[in-house]
Amino acid sequence: MKKIITYDGLLDINLEDETVSNTLYEGVQKKIKLKNVTFEDCIFKNVDFNEIEFDGVDFVDVIFENCDLSNKSFNERLLKHVIFKNCKLIGTSFIDGFIKKIEFMKVSARYINMSGTKINDMKIIDSDFSESSFIESCFKNIELMNVKFNKAEFLKTPLNGVDFSSSDITDVMFDLMSVKGMIVNQFQCVELANLIGVQVN
Image (cartoon, rainbow, N blue to C red; front, side, top):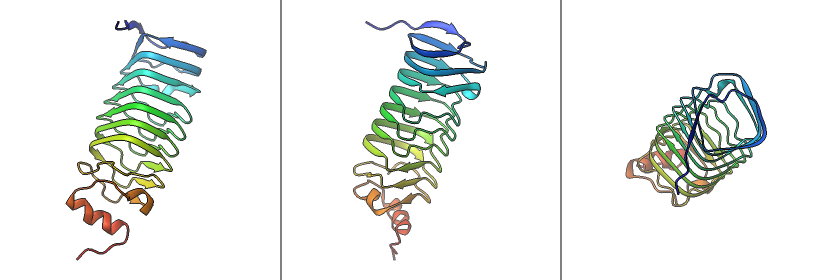
């Protein structure tokens, strides 16, 4: 049976050591603090998180739509069954986090940091991940479609089987460990060869 999302309007109180379920939040602007909170089966719509402080917050079965989560920290946190749609995630950090079944759709995620993150089932579509960082990340079941990775870095991050052929990898920094087995198109082969110091005549 489908769970019913109740309308709550504004997240306007500080929350600590709580689990919040089945709630729609829209238009959050007030300065608040969330500490040790788990959101389950919730929707955040048109929410600006710039005035919202995170401290130990997990998200399970959550949708973010038209939200600004720039410079937020999800470090060492759990995100499971989460969708980011038309969101700003500029400079957002997921370092050493645990991500399972996550989708990024039409997001601006420049400078996003997923270093050390364990990622299982991630889909990125029509999004900008330029200058992002994936260092010692662990990927499993990754789908990419029309993603900008300009000047991003993938270091000590195995990319075996990950298909970059529809994405822009201009000036991306790869190491030899990371590129083994990754899938690219014929034009990207030249770019990739130059990046790792191979000359193509």
